Length: 454
Ligand code: SF4
Image 1 (tube, rainbow, N blue to C red):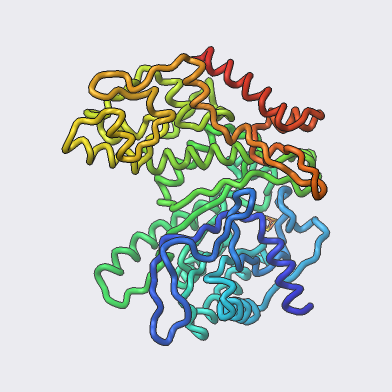
Image 2: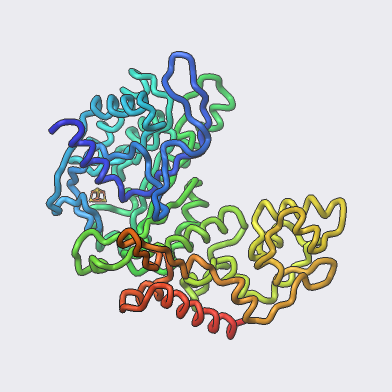
């Protein structure tokens, strides 16, 4: 098999992995070294469905000795297989880099024989890149659960970011669908990376020439919608991972059915992209808005509302918190107002040092008031008054009812529900209703429900 064929197979096999946004390392070019790395935006692109894909995102091998039932590369699946040699992979990366196709590498692998053997081969490929080709660009490498800690240490010295995929949101699901994988084998390297990464940061400050260890930190990915865990369970887990292992990112991957298996959603099931979007929004609230997972979802309402973003959902459930007076509220309180993000909160806090703020001043400093106006007061007066239906209409997320135009022939355009429209819109469309009518019907119903709840 020639290299082009291997690349085709192994790049295709890697496309289901979404944990590839590269960020966090800023390393200028060096004399005698090839490449540089900027703090964000290296080696990734966003596909139409919002997934992040790397320009050179490959598996070292897709020959797997494990049999995870949700995975196209599982042992029992009949598909073309390929494995690079370490030198082939290094030369391919350098060749692409020199042609300006890529700025870095995202390397993962199936379990080729054993976790240790797989990691040794990946490490050798990265060693050739770093030491022989003096490649200074960004490298994100997956660690294989179950590999020896010494190998995790080695790969962390060569890569900028490491990740260990948690795969499924609970141990029960892992046991059912990925019986070769053990929770401890996933969490142990995460713990090791967190400790060594923190140590290395200290050493870099204290000693000149200290060798960095995964300077861009670690991330993980979990599959959403293949198993029955609620959003609350997923958010609890996410919060714990951020806290315990200092993860930079948790990536959520809407399950795309690729295999027929009675334990998994049927092959024709649409991937839950809107749910994935809500989880990313909630993840953002944990990391930048000082929300806790338990505040966002309760035992009685364990899933996010498909029609509202998670912050609006929280606001609707907590009327006692509002209105917030923009001239006196803390930054943390401002951040809880729907429509006010970290930038607007900062602008408000800075602007009110020199003048007291009314609606005109808020508009002038660039605060978007479409939703916020119903939740704030300016100098003690309500910023806006609206009927319950008007407020509900401003809060509904247009993404949930998104319809695009699909061209069937040169002059034939039909409206089509976009992949991340609400499941109810997709269902009505699947039953034969025109997509724009389905979207309007579902929006009307959502509006009535929300108006009643307010
Ligand atoms: S270990 Fe499991 S998820 Fe990873 S490639 Fe093999 S079968 Fe797929």
